[in-house]
Length: 68
Image (cartoon, rainbow, N blue to C red; front, side, top):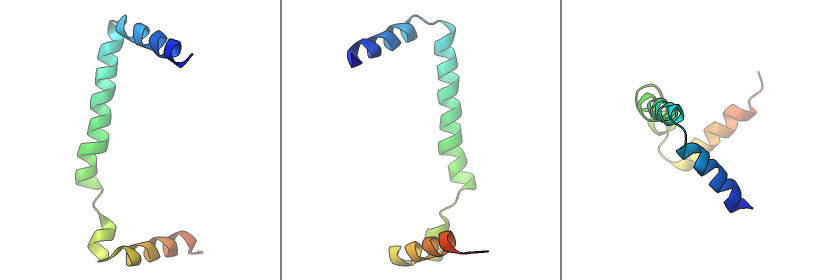
C-alpha cells in the first residue's frame, strides 16, 4: 500500500513540466528562509547571555511560566 502511494506521487512528479520548476523555486525559497535569514536575523541569544545549559534552561522555564 505504501509503495503504491509512493509510486503514484513519484510518477506524477516525474511527468510534470511546470511543477519541477515550481518545486525548485519552493526549495530555493525555503533554503533562503531557513539558512540565510537565520544567520543574519536570529542570533544565538541564550549562548550570548549564559555559559551553561542549566542557566539556559532556567531562563527558558522562567520566561515560559512568567505571569504578566
